[in-house]
Amino acid sequence: MSLTKSAEHAKGNLSGLGAIVLWSALPPLIRLVSENIGQLIGAALMFSVASVLLILINGWAPVRKFSIRYLAVGCALFVSYEVGLAVALGLAQDRRQAIEVGLVNYLWPCFTLLLAVLSGQRQASFLLLIPGVLISLFGVGWILSEGGGFSFQLIVANASVNPMSYGLALIGAFVWAVYCCVVKPLSQGKDATVLFFVATSIALWVKYLLSDYNLADVQPMAVLELVVAATIMALGYVGWNKGLLTGNLLFLAAVSYAAPVLSSLMGSIILNTTLQRYFWEGALLVTSGSLCCWWATRR
Image 1: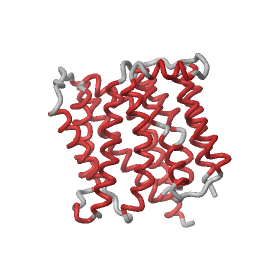
Image 2 (image 1 turned 45 degrees about the vertical axis):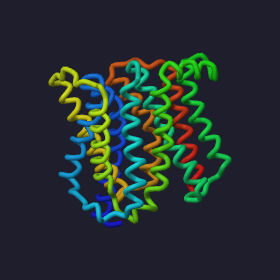
Image 3 (image 1 turned 180 degrees about the vertical axis):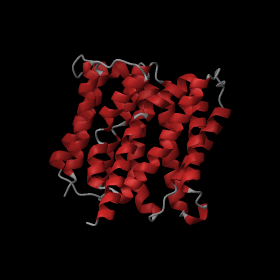
Image 4 (image 1 turned 120 degrees about the horizontal axis):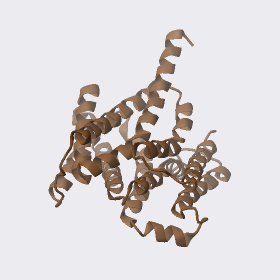
């Protein structure tokens, strides 16, 4: 490999790693924006700013470049996921619960690999795949049992305190898994994510205008949090794309499965929230399960 290609390869890996770190900070930042600006309008403003940044960085691609099927299916799944996750984080009763909701959403990697195998897109060893999915689910259950040992009664009791928030996060994990599996074949090598970001911001504005939410008394720090969250969202997308194009895909995929633990750490720091031992145990189980699923498909 030439020095130029080696340097480009290294830059791609660094860009991908940077995206993973940036996205790990995003759920707690979304929560801060929701607290200080408002659940719906905060998300709408954040996606609007991120959309503008992406257009400035990547440019605007005409709609006619993309197939109708790709736009319809991809946009529906992308918008549903992003709106659902923003609402789920906003509806969390406190910051600790917001971090838990974010972790539930991180079931999407193992769901993605499971769907890819079931749909015939990937081959895998079911001796590793099924245990991997079960380990990840067990990790979420362990957290929802709050250190009382794995108990379906405790899981149901704790989840029923805020079923909408946990439910949206779980549904979002499935929706994003479907998005990851169906969009690539439909895209024909083209990327309409900028359009999807714009569509998400429009959907959030419509939802806000049809709701009875009022704009909170916005402080300068809240505006800064909004800009930082939107910038992280946009730069994370740009960095991940560069990583996919020029980096080591297997390396980036493996590292990305550490995101549940990294995101929990970021959430604990950004939201100034102490997480108990059982939470970290559950986060490690979710990560271990996802890695197990990934290893099952490496052939």
